[in-house]
Length: 363
Length: 255
Picture 1 (tube, rainbow over the protein chains, first blue to last red):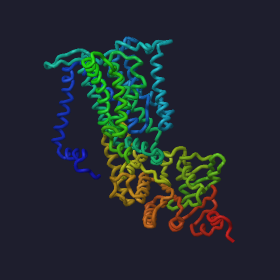
Picture 2 (tube, rainbow over the protein chains, first blue to last red):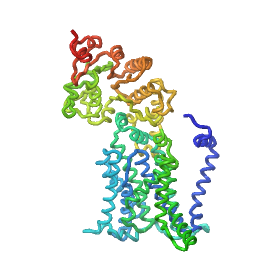
Picture 3 (cartoon, rainbow over the protein chains, first blue to last red):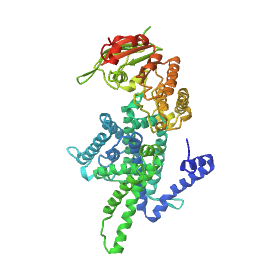
Picture 4 (cartoon, each protein chain N blue to C red):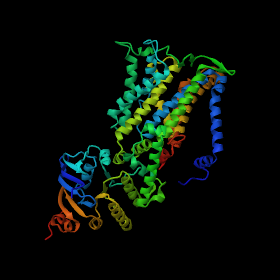
């Protein structure tokens, strides 16, 4: 491989030659990540909550990245699997049915149920290509949401548009994730505890993604994306490998959904609308399809920027004009549109693209 | 001698067009078998039926002593038939080495769990895939370009890479669809050497080719297709003198 002397890759390789430097870098990053919630909490607990949602979206984006980034299948109904995971958790840990299973039992169930939904959707539809698949998945996402909305009759399962409330937080024995606790003079609030849990899950998902990317299965996904006909001539069972991508992406979304339900304590069909699917897809595309770090960056940016706007735009308008002229939501969508146009013009492969995707789009 | 591949009465229609009519042929183990014919004779259609891309309307294939299941391309590859494509189909944005590594897919087993846990077995398999892929690049003579992207390789090297990738599936029968198309004389000569070597190393070859000189010098036996029918079969030199073949190529009887 020809490496440009000053490229990021070259710097990474020199870093690799100095393991001590690399480990110092990793240690600094780890300390920063561990200290982050306290820094955020000093500004306001809201920001820890926003951070948690951002990590949840990063989890979702990494799951979708397997489907869209690795296998090249456009899925516009991805949020449905998130919803399935969330409802699975809510139904098994709330007064809705009076069932209160522990979270470590429900999360795998949620992943499995979402996975089954992924296979149910994928098996008949993965013969479709490109836009056609996108349309079918979009429809699927809407169908699932409509079911959430209407499964209150004749038997009340989902409680319809009112949603399910008083969902159990994560609990291990007497240790609950939504109580304040003081340890070594530090105040561990509920959101801070969830932050650490999410960080651990994110780390696990990143490792799984990295290892898959660099494996026999990862190569098969890439081959299918490049040329499905040639891939099948290599003995790759294209339908099965695509289904695998679908099922894996769905399972990650199922786990993320379960955590979401526990953190919020309340879910309703409104959280799983089409716009959310598009949001997750935007995170993947904005950050850089196929590149794990790019995808996480995209998720963090698209989660935080709107919140920052919400907290600055309105006060700014009040001080300038004495009243709010433009709603933050409107500004958010304007900026969002502007960002997408700029991206298409300047960085079509994403902010931090994978090497391969960059080649595909520029050559 | 029993045949490695036997096609029995293959028929393929596209609407009203009879693309293949009752084509039967037998390829013996260890030979280079040529399939020739004018444009539109049905050679590539035959390839696509054999390798599972088109379903045949009737007829069957016997391969290596058993009925060949031609329902899906990946099953044909697993059975031991590898193919190349008339217009090269490489994984353009993957490196030459990665292309050949994909070819190892059908003979390796690591799944999601093995990949995620990175078990000793997976790591060993991955190392073996890597070594085998590199060896195959050396075999076809393009190991120096292992890290180049497939679409950046010169045309002749792309053809070789496609052959290396096909060989990675450990085929008993290597089916090549016009491998010399677009090659200059030197490239064709090295291709011929490569094919001779592949056969010497124990792989039977089915060759579709337009370059009559290459076919005549290289193939042990040749079948000629015209309008979807087999009009001649035999040793190259005999087939060349067959009046039906001459008519098919030149049109009309030469007085």
